[in-house]
Image 1 (cartoon, rainbow, N blue to C red):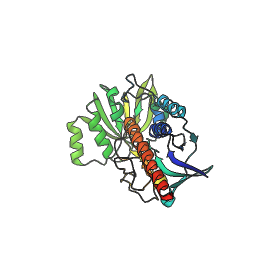
Image 2 (image 1 turned 30 degrees about the vertical axis):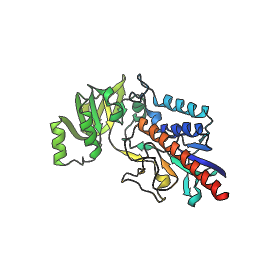
Image 3 (image 1 turned 60 degrees about the vertical axis):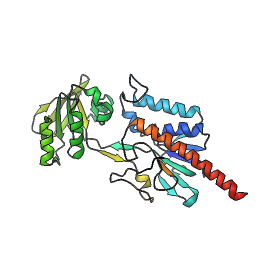
Image 4 (image 1 turned 30 degrees about the horizontal axis):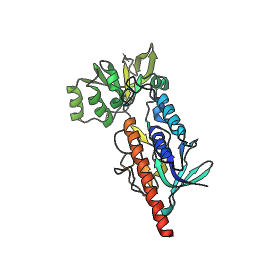
Length: 308
């Protein structure tokens, strides 16, 4: 049993940025990282402030980790299996190696994308041919022929966003019916978005671009870039049994200091309801880590007063 000021759960941009702050505040903490950061899949991010030529997600994570470790951060390759509120004294974070007691917990577990069930998908994502975030990188697809895989409300929202960039835009089905109202279809028609109801069967990647999509009806379509609009799964299972507020998608609701509705539990990054961006995640981490530090100071002063 270890007794710490804080446990940070998640080793993505939010968790590592929080580690930099907590280490510089000279706090006793540990970062638990299961090795599954979504940022690792980013081929090159161009909208992160301070990187005018872009930076790969893997390199960004390495730099953040090196910065955190420079100040003494302890980062463990371990998965948090269960989080338990320990009354007014804090939390118990259970891992395969044992439990860690801490006054505060910062949840930075992020999200995972719901991917289309297609062969060759992983390689296409690594090459930046299949993308997930128009806010992040639609600018880089300006003037291209773009397709969106989706069948729900997300596909409509992303289609209207991407239409500002694409020379041609196509909405593709995965064999499931589009959940689009007549007004939705009319909005897409006015935006000159083509809708193909036939399901996708195969993804072909060659010569540095998406070469073909083979449809079940035998048609072949070619696109420069594919966006997946199947939504995301918020990684909030760890806290689903705790008394706190989640939004309908399972994201944590926080206040202006990144505090959840459970005292002592903070959240930052994509696991929080709001805009899923690295710049936002690192900013939330700075806010959360600073409030954790300030709250711990207040707790320590109160303990000294009660003991005197």
